[in-house]
Image 1 (cartoon, rainbow, N blue to C red):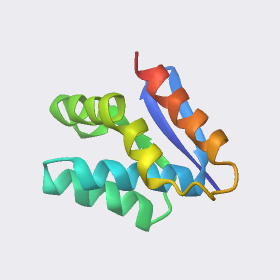
Image 2: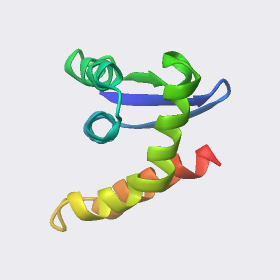
Image 3: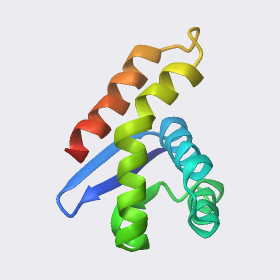
Image 4: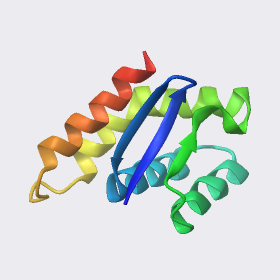
Length: 102
């Protein structure tokens, strides 16, 4: 199963389920709002496979965008094991997500 993040009304990023879940886990671990963190974890726990950055209001959207732009790639470089099969492809997909935020 795959997951999709709606970056804007006409811009989407899709990835395999594990990478989508990892990305939302990253966000949940780093957002300051505990309610937002819980909602992000719920998306993963319920295998919903969908996140629209604008669904939680403008402040949450701003925070999510900042985390993705500023921290996602560094965290992925550190956290994804060097032995991960297709690690380079996963990092490339995460870079595509960051590029879509520009």
